[in-house]
Image 1 (cartoon, one colour):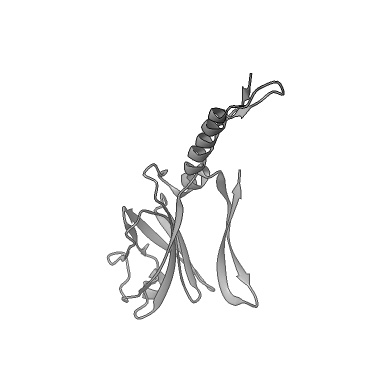
Image 2: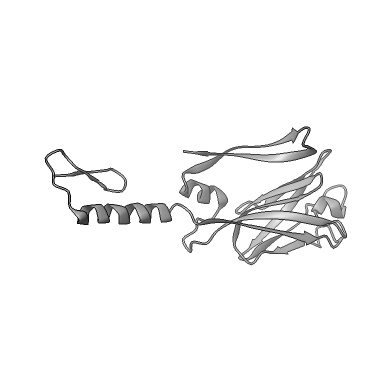
Length: 183
């Protein structure tokens, strides 16, 4: 008689066991269901043009049409990474960084400067006439975890580190590196 694996209860036959097609089909259904539950990850790429507004009372609004779990925005030397569940992000640049206050919606997000010493549109990733590019990570499954770390954990991954690095000679701009590892 077969033993079963610990996690998906797949058949593990003993040498004297007979093989049944039904057993194989059951195992393949379990494997298929297990893999389907690990993700449905998609990326959305796009761009927007800055309007020039900024400050605590004038947020930048980005409607994506999907419930993003993570968003990366970049323009020249300015970059920001937004993770669902976090209410703050940092606009990284070659010389300084600015704290952004973030609000998530079902189909996008908005961010504004946290009321620091200076309020410039470029600090809010909204410089008038400037094109910003973004990549949004989302999951189409209706059973998506509530935050990005939960989403990555559901795939067996964790964010180990987040750091800013320079990548010469390709770019003089800093690059945000998320080290994601399988657990």
